Image 1 (cartoon, helix red, strand yellow):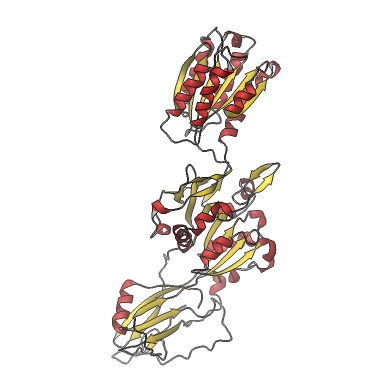
Image 2: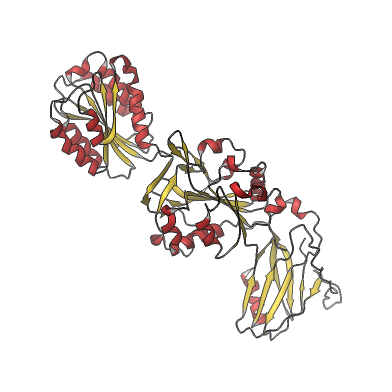
Length: 545
């Protein structure tokens, strides 16, 4: 039968090899679960074997005539279902993956765009496959009823599911994920539930210095209060993984709160309030402020995705653009960007300042002081928000070892350059990490397993990974590891060879009542014997259901 998983105990293998010496035995599931193939003749059953007392023993046996060949090498091969169903959004999107998989598996390749009618519509059709791979498939792409069918395939039958990203969508000029799309998954009944990750607008950790102008002019007309409120509002968009520091500046820069974990919100908020109590009452100089902020950010030992300076002021600085530009450029070379928010009149060169710093320039009119917090929050979100990132290579690190990494040299895993914003669910295994977000996560779901590769495996950007020997081996391992481990007691098949006997543990692949219905006791597992045998095998019995 095609849909049997054969689990052979080590002792059994030793016993068989001892008994058969140079015989080669292949167990091959025959037929389809729950379906009798009319083209195959059912095997005739022999008389039941008896013990010394003459009483019949179980299970009933079927005689199989051995075929003797001159194969010199003894071996034992136990086969199981190795068929994979690969469904891609567009034709060719899974071509690179398909080429690798066909080295080991029998793969059926279907696309939503061209083969929607051929996609399985019932559980029996799904049970033809040991694993299903979805390449860039969103919930909205699935044919009617397929989501529930896929859920039953994994949860009830114990099938394996692998999801992979792919080409993205453009919505109102912005690139957004097609697969792993938070809004798309939110509308699903089962799909998000099945995945080991939650898609989200991932915010990798950032470090930000907020510099507030406390010169004399800022004390007028509520500008200082608006700036302080804006600085506090930034704490609302920073996570506990982020870092924040506060500077005040007039003629010189003053450290109000050192660059620290954003989790210290109450202490940071109190430090910002203190600015209002002791304004500078002097002029405005940028050079020292930009320099100090850059030194603090560059000195941060923790790894963050972005280092950023937000400077809020109300006028032209007393130092020249040529004086503070070198500090902006040096910061940018160190990966530190800069944005500027001006209150009231828009000073000259501010757009040039922001452009040189790799950030943005914002103007808030005197009638719109209430918008200062929103402007500052928007700037931080633009600097930090990542739904999908691609183009810059990143290395993969192992976080949790599973069978998917068997035989893989961790230091030789090739780089990727695409990742999707997501977090692992509780109970899931994060196998591979990128710089800030999980790249491969898997978990057990009902009787089966689900793995999510949060990257794409298509196009020029991933060609190096797909052509790399370690990359290929890793992909094959990820697919192979999606078979669940059996927890229930297997049903038994008895193999007798002369005076030797052994038990092969076996179970029906999946447990759905739909597939079990109609099966008869003693369903036959075909056994083929070949090899130069010193002891002739006599019979194989079957007692499966």
